[in-house]
Length: 282
Image (cartoon, rainbow, N blue to C red; front, side, top):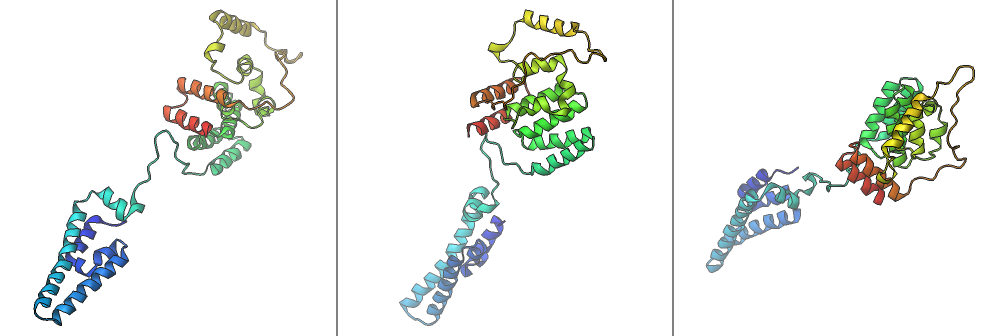
């Protein structure tokens, strides 16, 4: 990183030898300044009459120009001077609404989370996965791993929250939600059945929102259901069998609608919402 003040000092006091140009990397101009000064000095010493006065004026001119250059450099704003002579030292600015590239690789964090998960240290696994999600919010696999980890701890609301995020961000092979053993206990709960019937959303679109009467009837019916007995086994029958073929990923409009729901619910900040929307739109 070059120092503007030091460059001006070189121009004022050593500029007649071209030192200031050498300092900022303008080697050719520094060589020209150096040769011009000494050429004029030699010509003054070897000439007489009017020519001597002319060459003396040229020597004074070669001394005065660097002094003026140094004064101009001192008066120039730092960023403007750096942009011209030291552009590498300028900070890189990211336009608003565009997410900056990830400064840390999430692979190591995800591998650490998987290692903790396999050793049943679910709290530590969640910490690692949350760090990875903070770096790359749109990683569907990270949110799915978080859902499995929260489900193992019985924290089903958080598990469903991250399932929703994983589906929103285009989870590969979404049929894993119905088959993964870590989610087996959660799949038996009535709240999960509502979540699944709403296409893995905790938040309904405005036009799909049920009326208050329908919501109240559904909740009462769930609470009135007798618990499954140990002898007869679970009595719950899913409303619809999960399709044999892998479910198609949500289209672009549906993903944008989901992002809007998450933003309106306060799950995504305005910056995160804009970044993910830009990512979907390419």
